[in-house]
Length: 296
Ligand SMILES: Nc1ncnc2c1ncn2[C@@H]1O[C@H](COP(=O)(O)OP(=O)(O)OP(=O)(O)O)[C@@H](O)[C@H]1O
Ligand SMILES: [Mg+2]
Image 1: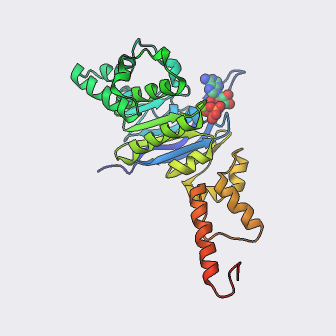
Image 2: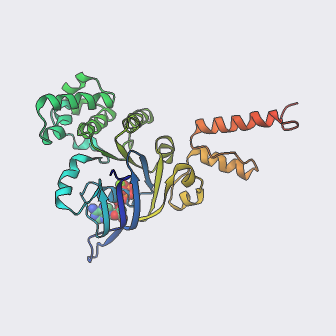
Image 3: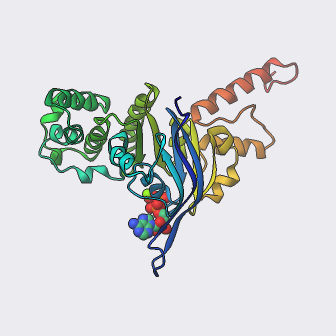
């Protein structure tokens, strides 16, 4: 039987340097389930525990207490942990700093080669991964150090995609990029997830990105999971977002201001495009009602 969840944590607690003056409780009693194939946004202010949490999903960190089950098995099982590096791909923050090969091809090929694939299969995967992140085949010959920051970020993401991970985790993939480059990369990641088979966990403190790309969202605050649920359900609690130190998406803020002015929208818009549609429909139906129009 296939499990519905690909990740499940049960009272996951992580303490750095326990029993020393540097002791830090980074995660406390986290119960989180990630559905297979979904796009989950993991949000929270700086230091809330986002990176610490996902490092448990590929076995780089182990719980201080509690349990973490990934792809059907406990991460403390040493055999399982050994295979997690290729089944769970993590794109760390500023991954371009970890590019160390002489050409783009060599860099993207690093993971598939370590998986023991033959050269034709490696080449096929490199080509596919470069195409997914929007880079032409010829880019493979380039020296990564000569490329722009946005392009190097794509190369780093391609390196993880080339392993065809079942779970793809991205830690602030848009950080430091200009808005166009960030949008382009997130659109590509969305296509990978929407194509089926890949679960995506996107770490971000930008709720606009969560609203645009994710199916569900999990909110962390000081190492605790404040709420996990579908976007509309979680984003309707503006107080909760503020408690987590997060700015609500602009469309949610608009809905809040309209509500304060006595105008309640029929549904909560998540993006400005949705807000335009919702307000437009509301205005159209108000005009249709006798006496409800704003113009005679
Ligand atoms: N390697 C480490 N050693 C000791 N403490 C750490 C380590 N990594 C993180 N911490 C602490 O654990 C807590 C959670 O940090 P973490 O990096 O997981 O948060 P984050 O939500 O990813 O933050 P950011 O948005 O800044 O990346 C913080 O108090 C941080 O100082
Ligand atoms: Mg982090």
